[in-house]
Amino acid sequence: MERLLNVLTVFSVVLLILVLRSVRKAHIRVEYSVSWLGAAVTLLALSRMESLLGRLGQFLGVANPPLALAFITGGIFLIVFYRHSVVLSELKDANISLAQRVAILEFHLRTLHEEQKAKSGA
Image 1 (cartoon, rainbow, N blue to C red):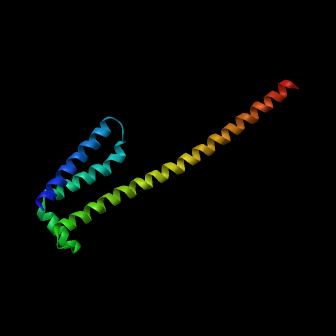
Image 2: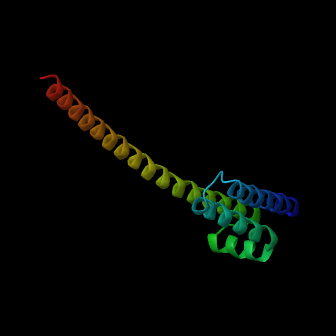
Image 3: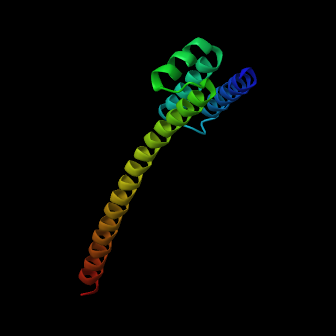
C-alpha cells in the first residue's frame, strides 16, 4: 500500500505542477483550474494521511484502503469531468446563439445593402 500512496503523491504533485504551469502560460483559465487544483490537493492529502484514508474507507464501508482510495479518486475525477461537461454545454449553447445572431446581422446588412443599391440604381 505504501508504494501505491507514494505513486499517488507523485501523481498529485505532477498534476499540481501541470495545472499551475498551464495557468501561468494561459493554456487554461483560472476558473477552470480551480477544480483540478482541488482534486490534486485532495489526492495529495489522502496519499499522505493514511489515517484519514482509513477512516474514509470505513465510512464508505470498504475494508481495503487502496480500494477506498481508488473509489475516492474516481469520484473526484467524475465530479471534475461533470463540472467541465456543464461548462462545455453552456459554451456550445452560447456559441450557437452567437452564430444565429451573426447570421441575423448579416441578413440585415445584406438587405440594407440591396435596398441602397436599388435606391441608387433607380
